[in-house]
Length: 113
Image (tube, rainbow, N blue to C red; front, top):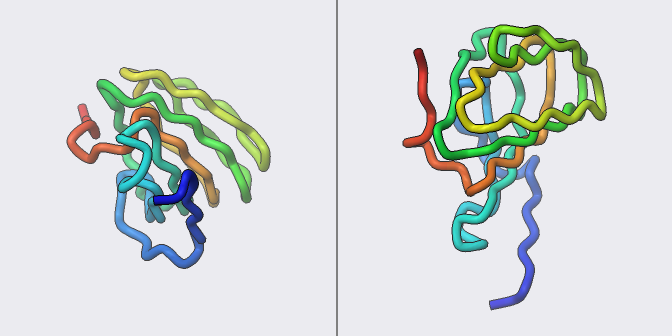
C-alpha cells in the first residue's frame, strides 16, 4: 500500500448527517486518526456534540453562523473553528464546510440533548 491516499470529495456520494449532507473520505486509512468531510449545511442542521471527537470546521463557501455552546458566531469563507469534545454545536446558513474529525469520524459518537 502507498504511503498516501487521494480523495476527490466532489465524487464521493453524500450521506445524511446532523449538519446536512456529508461526503466523507479516508475512513479506511490512517488507523482511525482522522477523516475529512465536505459538508453542505442544511436548514435543518441539528445541534449535537461528541464525547471523544474534536472537529475542525473550515468554511469554504457561504456566510452564516456557528452555534457553539449556545453562542452564535458569524462565519464566512476561510473561517476556521476548532470544536472540542462536549461542545454543543451546529452550523447555520447556506454554507459549504470542510470538516476534519479527530480521531476519525465515528457515528456512535454523535449525541443529542
